[in-house]
Length: 47
Image (cartoon, rainbow, N blue to C red; front, side, top):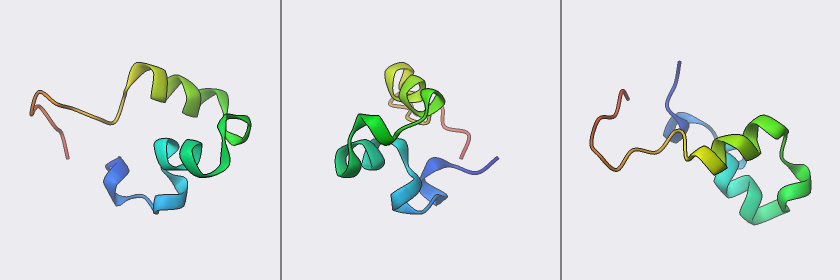
């Protein structure tokens, strides 16, 4: 599995939300944003 930072900017859920709005995101992308997955402030990053 790749890190979100390795994805093209246009495919990243947060950037996609900011550029095109919530209606363009899939349910899984919205859920990932709500759960804040793919982002770690604790330093326990896998990638």
